Length: 226
Image (cartoon, rainbow, N blue to C red; front, side, top):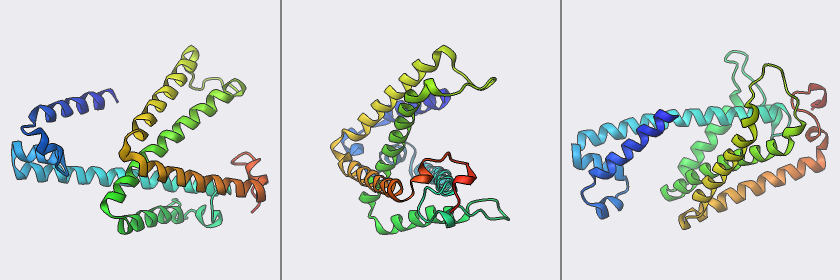
């Protein structure tokens, strides 16, 4: 993480110093590619764009894998719509195929249906949601930490536990502030609010009609009969 941070900062400083016409670069659709083109020519620009394409492909696969596993885990515990289907695992590949296809399908539909600007808003929203999840996890941990059992030999920060948790929460709050305060982020904030509303309604529905599942520990097979 330190190496990535240092190299990334050096790259940004180098790019900034390489700018010859700040107003023109600021209005470019892809400023980094424009800087590379001005300094090294079209071949270097295309090489950079090809590398970025592969990087985004890798990141997309990671996100799709992570999301499909979240869908599977929630479905395994009967806490996701159509959980009977979404919790199925292929006996050959040992992977949750229905959950993976669901995430892939949603991504394809969004790519086709949304114009470029709308897609950028969705990408911005996807950066706000993880910060909210991380923040909520830290708050939950700080709330129940004194009631958690300690396992011998398990990872433990010792006296640094509380300071690290508080610093992590402060960092998350700063991140959220940076993400939601720009005027351009209004649409993304509305998207996040809508998703949270849908999630809240689904939770209320389970709380009303399927409370037994919510009151059971995940992994307790006896509690998940359906």
